[in-house]
Length: 354
Image (cartoon, rainbow, N blue to C red):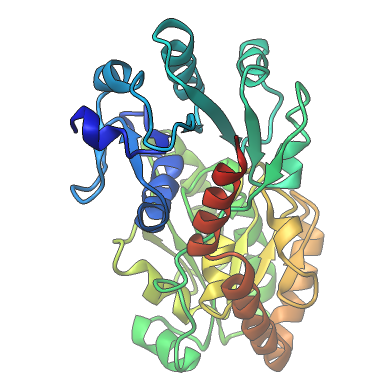
C-alpha cells in the first residue's frame, strides 16, 4: 500500500502470531465482514487471505505517521500482548496518531506486565462478563461476545436423516468436539456414557478431535474403560475431521456436550446449538452466560460427573423436549451470537472511540 491508500485506512487489526490459533481463526472470520464495514488493514501477513490488505510491522511503522483523510486517529485493535506492544511502539517512538483497543477472552489472572500494558490502552473489550472480571487493572469498556458462522453451522432439514448419513449405529447422537485432553473433560462424558448407555441402546457417543502424543495415555485409559464395558461401537473416537465435514457431524447430533475443566470462551456448544442440538456444558468459558438452562440445554457445575449423568439421562429420556431445546438453541444463536453480529458490534465500538 502507498501513502495515499493508507490515508484512507481507519482501522488496524493486530496479527502478530505466526502460529495458527483459535484467536487467529476468529480474527479471520470477523475480517470477512469487517472489511465490508470499515476501511482496514491487518498488521501481519500470516494466514491473511489475498482479498484483505495486510502489511508488515516495519511498513506499519513507516506509514503509521501519515494522517487519515478525516484527520481522526486510527484505531489499532489488539488481542495479544505483542500487539499492544507494537501499537505502543508506533505511538510512543514513531509519533503514530493511534487509539488502541485491547480485546481479552482469557479467564485467568493476568501478569503484572499485561496489567501494565492494559492500563495504557485507550479502551478494553472483553468477550464475556466472566473474562471481564479478571481485568482488575481497569474497567472494561464493552463486552462483545464471540459469534459463529450461522451460514456454515445451521439446522438440518431432518436431524434423523443427518444422523443416519453419518453411518453410526443407534438413533440418538451425542457429540463432544475439541482436542482429546484432560482439560476438555472428555472422560466425564465417557464415564457418564458407560453408566447410561447399557440402558439406552439407541444412544451413540461421538468424540471428535485430535489427540497429540502427550495425551495418548489419557485417551488410552478411556478406551480401556470403553472396551471393558463392551461399548466400543457406541462410544467412538473419530479423530480430527476436515473443515468441510464438521458441520455435517454437528447436524447429526441431538446433543452436543462441552465439559471442559477450564476454557477461555468455547465455541463448540454454539456451533452445536446453531446446528439444532441441545447442549450440556460445564460452567467454564462463556457458556453459563449464553445457555439458557432448561431452554437450550443445561449447564452443570464443572467436573461434576453425578449431575452430568443426571442431566444426560434427562436429555436422552425426553426426546421431544430435547428436540425442542435444539430448536430454541438454534434461535438463540441466530439472533444473538452470529459472527456477523460480533463483527458489527466491534465496528460500532471502534467508531465510538474518539
